Image 1 (cartoon, rainbow, N blue to C red):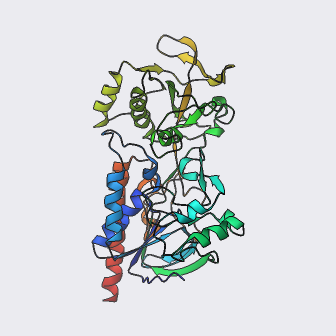
Image 2: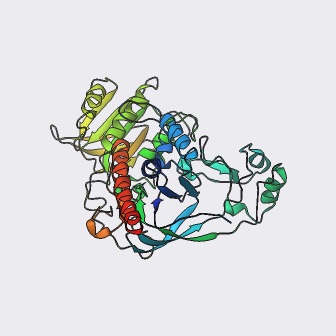
Image 3: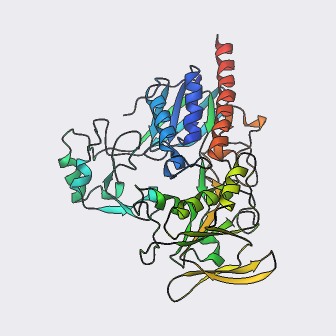
Length: 426
C-alpha cells in the first residue's frame, strides 16, 4: 500500500507536467509539504514530447533533467504517478481529496534494466508517440521517464506474456497482483496544473485528417523529428514511408473558429515557424505556411523574421477551404490567396495541421469541485475558488515560459493559504 502523510498544511498539485512540477518545487523549496499527483506513469507532461523549444531551438531534456533532479532531492515533495483526483470536498485550509492510483504492476524494486520488456512479444499503440508506433507490453514510457520504473500494460495481465515478464525479472519487481488503491488525504490548498490536450483534428472534416494518411497534426510532426520517436527522427509519409520534402503547414486548424475552438491557442504560429526549421534541415526540404496572420510578438518577432528570410519557406495568406487527395496519395490544399485573390490547388508531400490547445480539465473536473471556468474550459483564478488555483495551461493557452510563470504565481497563492492555516492553528 502507498503510504502518504498529509495535513491541512499540505498543498496538493494535480498534474505533473512542467507547470505542476514548477508549482510543486516552488512550494516545497519554500518549506511546504506537497503531494504531486500525475495520471501518466511519469512526470514532465507534454514538454517531454517536444523535439525542440522555440525560439532558441534548444532541447527540453536539459530543463527536464534539472527539474527531475530537484524533485528527487526534495523530501517535501511526494510524487504519485498513475494517479487521479476523483473527488475534492471542503474549503480553503480544509479539503478532503480522494485519489485513485492505478496499478503499475511494477514495484520499487525495479532497476529499469529492461529484462521484462525483452521477454515479452505483445505490443500496444504508444500514446507517447500519439499512436504512430507501438510499445511492448512491458515498457518504459520514454528514455528519461521519472520515476525510473517500467510499466506493465494492463491489457497484458492474465496472458502468458505477463508471466514471462514476471519470470524475467531478477529483482522481484513485477507484481501482477497489484490492485487499484484509493487514498483520502487532508490538504489545505489545491493547484490544478492539468495541462492541455491537442484539439482533435478529425473534427475538422474539410481537412480530411481521418481520411488522408498524409495529413497529420503538429504534435505528431514534432514526435517524428525526435530521434527516439516513431520514425527515428525522419519525416516520413504515413502512406508509403517515403521521406517528405514538400511540407505544408496550415495555421489555426480548428482555432479561432466558432465551429471548433473560439480562442487563439497562442503557441501554434511559433510552433509551425519552429517546425519549418526542421524541414529546412532536410536536403531539398521546403515549407509552405498557410496563415490568417502570424502572431509572433515581443521576443518572438526576431525568430519570425529569420524564418521569413529563409528561401525554403513560403508564406500564403489564406485559410484553406479544404484538402483533397490525388491518385498518388498527395494531399492537395485548396483555397484562395487573400493577397491578390488567386485560387490555388497545390499538392504537397505532407500537410501538418497546427492544432490548438484544449484544457485537459475540460469536462473532467473531479467530483465536488466548484470553481469558475470560462467559456473555453480554462479555470479562472477567481476569488470565489477559495484555496483552489490554476497553473499553466489549466488557466489559459500558454507557451512553456508563460506556463512556468503562471505556476510560480499559483504556488505563491497556495503558500499564502497554508500560511494562514498555520497562523490560525499557531
